[in-house]
Image 1 (tube, rainbow, N blue to C red):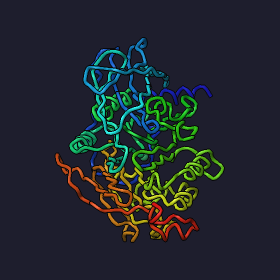
Image 2: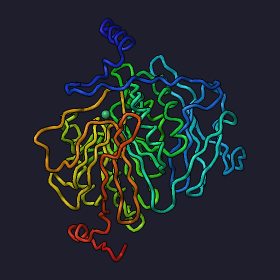
Image 3: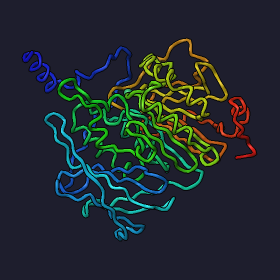
Image 4: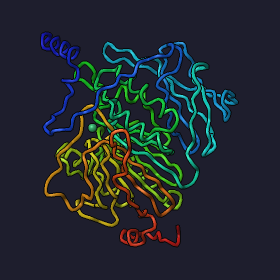
Length: 436
Ligand SMILES: [Fe+2]
């Protein structure tokens, strides 16, 4: 018993990824060079600063210090260098085998005004950061991209995202690709800080966040939950792995592919109650994000989201969810509106956007002949933008990474289901265009 355990631990120390690696039977375009982002500030200075929305007018500021005595304090104001307000928050840390994290700080600040630039400082010293709050009303622009990683492609995707303004970043899972190498979580935090400290990053988990190892590290999502704390409490969820939030007339549901989702599960019950609370007059747009796609015609990860689709698709359909975004498959694919494997004008429009730029490369093979439900497929790195213009119309565009330039490869208009009378009459609800 002891010898196999010793060999297992030795194997983990030498090749930790091998214990987590997944079947990689599909071929991919060569990935970009890995980038490690070093710690270049003092140990008491904040690093890996990122922000996330909390409630209707608060923001959570998260960061890490090597220095254990550093205070969980954020000072902020609307003028650079002048901090009229301050807030104290909480902190945590975790151990992962031989690794011990820095002090992870989470401080909620607010109430904040919409569409306003705030300047802030973390822990009472170090560099000044700034962010812009999202608008109170439409229009609003979301950037959406999953499976980000930390390679040259990631860098190019982030540069393209930064070249055009947006309000909120939505990430449907697979962030750092640390895959048990905990210093890579720190490197990822430093890589994304210039972007994630300026705009709220709202994330849900992917398979690369799990990081559980039998016997040695049985608790899943240890690093992810400690570092990327999302506003789950505020939406009645009991888990950081699924939650919802509302911003500028949009209700956004972040689902968890890697926690229970069957009809008896906490997640299922929470989703039912969350959907029941949606008021389409207040939030005419409803969007869901989930890591493993429910519809996918790529040979990569074929059928991996199927069990969850069978469990939860009806809930989203009956609630007339407008759009479902996924990651996991490293390519771009856009479907029509679907319910139960058939085109349905009252079902969500499905998009796979797992093309952020991670080290694993692209999923090149789409099944042939193409499914009539799949309207655009391409294995390239890039990102998506959802600009919700008003209560009825939104623009979705996919921006392919063409070397140093971003190229708009697809651009479509989408109509919200909230005012599609036929879709509500068919389930016996009386929400009509006139009422909205
Ligand atoms: Fe994944």
